[in-house]
Amino acid sequence: MEHIVLRRFVLIMWIYTKVIIKHIIRIPVYLLIYLIYLIYILMPKDEKLWIFGSQFGYAFVGNTKYLFEYVAKNKKNIRAVWLSRDKNVLKYLSNSGYEAYLTYSFKGFYYSMKARVVIFSSGVGDINKLIPYDSHTKIIQLWHGFPLKKLTLKEELISSLRKNRMISFVKNIGLRIFPFASEHYDLGIATSDSAREKLSYALKIPLNRVVVTGYPRDDILISKGKPSKIFNNLKRNYDFKYLILYLPTYRGNAHSVSNIFNLLNEKYPFDVDKFDRFLTQFEALFLIRVHPLSRITDQNLIDKINKSQRIKLLLKTPVEESDVYPLLRHTDILVTDYSSVYSDFLLLDRPVIFASFDLENYMRTDKGFYYNYYDVAAGPIAKNWDGVLMYIKEAINQPEKYKEKRERVCKMFNKYKDANSSERVYKAIMDILESSI
Image 1: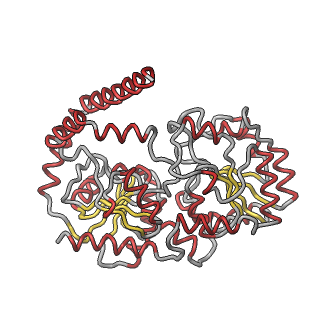
Image 2: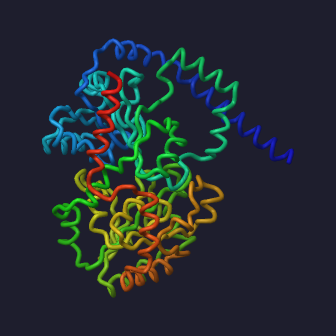
């Protein structure tokens, strides 16, 4: 028992020391930001100017993408501006008739400081991490997934640190000196009451500021429209009847070598030839889309997959094809593990297979879950790739087998099953703007 207490004390002090050192190192940066802060608070805010960004400024995807498109097309009273660090994204948006600027350009800084509303799906780094936002600007956190797994490592420990009096005292002094040092949110959104509570806790947003609206990115799954460009390209280049999409989440620290594709090499051999034969038999195409924070390290495996006509890696794609949601709409079977994308896919009531080979280890060493994984996994859980193939065959022959569980979990995860989430989010933002007048 004493050993456990000592370990906990050492871990707390390590985290505490690390935080202090981090902020000491950042003092010169904070002084620069303080100058920007003075300019920011003196600049009049434009009530009609809304700034959007996503994925740390490097992509045009997610909830912010779909809300941005919706507002730009349907709400002429709002000036919707996208900021990005990627020139390809800016070129695409400009050619599509949208207003977009480079994040760290003069206009990027100017509009970032002038906007009354900033909207992102990860953190303020999606917009401009150098802008010291405070109550002069409404900060909208759309987030990027249902909170199936915990959002941070050692979340309980972090929660206890928040309650530590000494840490709270030091933090309060720091915030008085640098009032912009702690990111806050004026509004968060969720897909259900259950998700609302989890996100409120994890993101430190007061519960009354988290609104159940559904996710804007889910509108495209439910709305009827023309096939996406990426799907049309697949149909031109591949002959298939069933589209199977593999969307794994990342493991541990982002960009670590032992990230996701350890599931595709030594420990869980991925037999490309066996997959090819199986997929050919069922006229299926197997797409692999890695998490944005993951990377592939097995070049031999990549080379084998690239020679296949039944397996395709979705790696570097044009901006208009980088978003997986238009493709998800055409997907017949989803293969995933702990990715919350399956909560969105449940809206389509199609088979889901869980390639959770490292489940026990993941629960023990990684972030863990807010829910009992076995209760909310609305489909079979495979132990290896042979199991995945077996369940793909079952999904093709018996697509209704897990229908009852899919419907039950879908109701838990999604309050709405329509294409009006963007409108609900827009109204929620307007409500907080009107209440602050």
